[in-house]
Amino acid sequence: DNYGHITPLFIEKIFEYGKDFLREQYKIITDSFAKAHSDILPEYQRYIAVITLADTVLDICLGVDEETALSNAVKNALKILRLIPTITEIDDTTREINSIKGFIAENQSRFIGGNVDTDKIQKFYGTIESDCIYITVAAMKQACTDGGFNYDKVVTDLITAGVILPSNKIKKGYKNPLKTFQKKLGKTNSDCYKIVFSDSE
Image 1 (cartoon, rainbow, N blue to C red):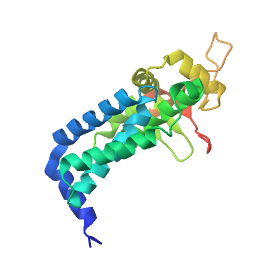
Image 2: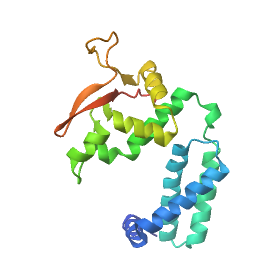
Image 3: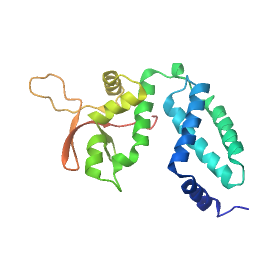
């Protein structure tokens, strides 16, 4: 009955609710997930929260009342969360990789640029290229802070795992190659980590 109509209805409803309402609902959802599944990584909870919020808005577009739509979406999401490995079931390096991937995904538009001052925003985050991602030292530190990880340990673990590719350059007076590359971001040269995720990651 709704063939061809649901997408514009969905988008109209999002604009009708506005950012403040959606952020409020998103927080309610993430808080409920954190309470029910504190042993699951926050980034997984955030991913499922976005899907839950979308499902809620979709049901409302199809005529379900708001309270029932949210309740049903949360119930379904909690079933999905039970299938996700807990923190204790995931090794440290995998958790670190997932956290960094989550940070990059959440800030993808800032790496790519677009309808923003690309020079200003990319010099903090970095850039996404066809074969790798350059993430600035500042952004890596922010990603580690957001994920609750130790920055130095993450860098060491990701180099060992082959996710961070160190530079071949050796700074004068040092024996080991540099961990970072100098990357031109807009008009600025920034120290960046070169990241390559394998297909299995």
